[in-house]
Length: 315
Image 1 (cartoon, rainbow, N blue to C red):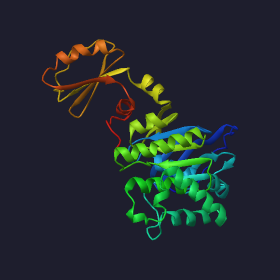
Image 2 (spheres, rainbow, N blue to C red):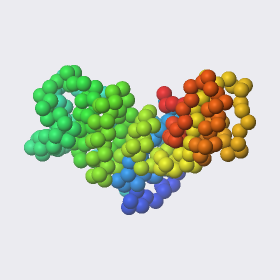
Image 3 (cartoon, rainbow, N blue to C red):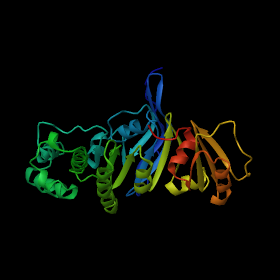
Image 4 (cartoon, one colour):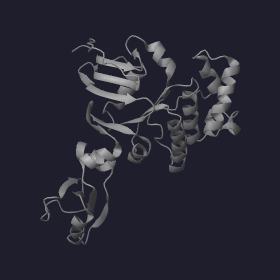
């Protein structure tokens, strides 16, 4: 099988849309990384891509910012066809990659100034933007510090600042907080919330369900190159799982009590999950497992992911 490109007719893009993908396909030889997916991203919204490693999230993002050519279908960013107008698209997009790819031989401010040259930003304007961005990410006092002396959280904030140097209309962030401690993660969330208030379109892939719930207006869940579902976080919880879930840890798989028709159950590893529209339907089950650790809580995106993919966490 070859990577011969086959293009679907462009879907019309409306003024309020930032990205439109139609039957988007990416193949690497016989491997299908992205399998004819359709989605749209509205201007000014935070749009999330969730899924396990190998789901196709990063590949989809790389196609959007013209890093990876697509095999088939169509993909438009604002008014431009990705296949035909990569230069125009790169000018309006900022990218925060998974890896920390700052220049270790330069200090903080030099990393920003050098990157500004790629967009042919004049030196005076670049210095103005750099100072504004350092203030925004809280690194003004670190501007003369070499990159290797920064903490992990500071490096991620600097990469966000670098992605904003060209005043992008679309910001693409591939797992921006992976590896950060909780405080550094929340610091970065605060900056992203400010960008949302400025109506910058954000595409975000993440391994953290809480991050997706807090930051994303809409999201898709992907697995094996396909989109399993899409919607707002609250819609996905409401449509995919019941309102409440009871976790029973270490329950014997053969010991399944009689259940109300309104209660569904799923077992993953040594944990059993009971889903129901009300907590009252689940509390009697706690008494039936007195020797096991249990947790009754509202359902969340983690449960949606478990239900759709059979995995209890993103890895």
